[in-house]
Structure formats: structure tokens, C-alpha cells
Image (cartoon, rainbow, N blue to C red):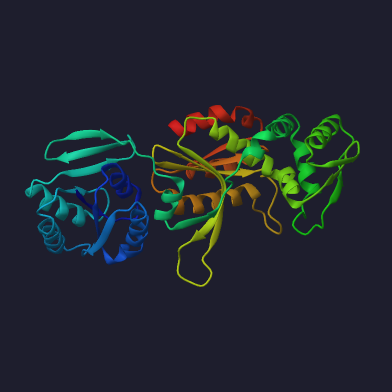
Length: 373
């Protein structure tokens, strides 16, 4: 079978039918403005051992679209050929639909919202989507190439009891999380091992004992600990929260979860921009991005009257829009409460879910509802 797709800025519907129908040949119809998107799709499709080629169509010339479509059908007269009309310009959609419909060829539309592929012609039929697009492929067709993520997570499960203890501290005594963060603000410049002393407090005494028993630190006095390396320092400064969100997400009915995903965008230039995603979840061919923060979201950015929480939102919104597509979703998970009304209002406008402060105690239920809405 050969399969034709219209290339747009939303590549996931194209990849969905390619993976589901498993054609031996894919023909991408792309305008010159969509060459970059077509190349990304070509790369991912070829990795599935499928032959793929791109043919150019003129975005607003219906006669050209019809002509190219007719030639594609002629090229595959001895083969079944199908069309996915999800995407492209209106002229592209009308022109290809008209040509394939007149030739009696199967035409499909991907309804991501309801997780189904609709066969539009010759006989209408609804087909459940039964493929799972990996996080790696999902990001790749949007131009982001993963270089690293946490592959071996056994150590995360092994220290879950420490993470849970710190989470309870964040829920019940949030000011103590701020104290830990302030003691570890220069961890990238430190020469290890380093010693930090926390206040003589029953909760700190308990946590220091748990950290020592696990071998994560050496205990010098009741609340003075020696941190052996930067990895342990990063965990104590806030990576514990990313691990908590990651483990909670993994416990749910999802397709895939990745932690601490780093990589580069495939833009031109000597230094492609880099980015990092804290936690990514895929479910039903949709991507969900959670940004995890343990710093005080209500404090002001140095030298400005802007809150850190507002900065978090803009960063999350920009990165999410670039990588998630129309049906992706974004969440800000903050171990400390977001009390700034403007930040909460902006998050609602940006369609960013906030789970913060004491609400992290019910993170699992919050994630369930968010993933299934």
C-alpha cells in the first residue's frame, strides 16, 4: 500500500496513519513553506524502514494540487493508494480530496481528540487509533532531537522513601524547603565534598538521619551533613521533586514517561539551541509536559518587579508551544505555593495547569484528571 499525506505544522496526524497503516511507500505533499516539516517527517518515517518521498505543491493553486495528485495516483496504478487529508492548506485539502474522491481512493482524517481515524470515503468508518508514538519520535517531528534522559531509574525507586519524606516536609513545612535551597545555591561552583548545616529542628534531624542511612551523605553533627558530589547536591536542591513527579506519572496508565530530557533543536546555525524537559508523558499520541520547581514562585526576579512564577509560565508556554502541538498539554508543578493572583490568572489564560504547595499531596489524582481531560 502507498499512502499520501499533506504536510502542515502539525505532523502527528501524518505519523499516526503511517504507523497504523504500515504502507510500504509514503508520499508527502508539501508546499515550499513546509520543506523543513517534510524533512523531519521523512527522517522519522525512514527510520521505520518505509520508503518516503516529498512532492511539492503550490499552497494556493488548486489546479497545481489536482495535477500533482493525479500524477501520484498514476504512478501507483498497480498499488492500493490512500490519502490522509489531516493538515495542509484549505486549497491543498480540497484539491487532494477532489482528486482522490473522484478516483474512488480511500480517504482518511485523524481525529486526535477522540483517538480515532475517520475513513471519509468511499464508505465512512471510524477506526480506533492503536499505535503509540514514542516521545523520541514525537519530539523529532517537531524538530527536537533528544540527546540524553534518565535511562536507568532503579536508583530513583531505591531512594523513593527519602523522596517521600522530603515531599511530606514540603507539604507540612514549606519554609524548610527554602532553607535547604538557600544552603545549596552555588552547587555548580562548589568543590566537593561540601558541608552544610541546617537548623537544629526535629524534621531536619530526621531527614539527615535518613540521608545518612541511605549513604547519600555523611553526617558530621545532628544537622550538619557532608555532601559527596554534585549529583547528591542537585537531588537535595530540587531533583527530588522531579523524581517524585516522575514516579507518580509512571504509576499511572500512560504509554511512556521520560525524566530530565535534554537535546537540541534542528535549526540552522553553528550552535543549535538546547532545551531541557523535566518530565514528559505520552498518552494516546498526545504529549504532556510538566515543569517542576522547588524555588519560591512568588519572589521577584533580581532587579525587576516580575515574580519568578511569571517567568516560569512564559518559559513553559514557549517551550510547550514549540514541542507539543495542538493537543499537547502543559503543567507547572511547584513544591511551594503559588499565591500571586496574576500568575494564576495568566496560567489559566495560557491553559497551563498548576499543582502547587499542599496540592502536591494529591498529585496522582491531579495527574489522572489532567491526562484524561
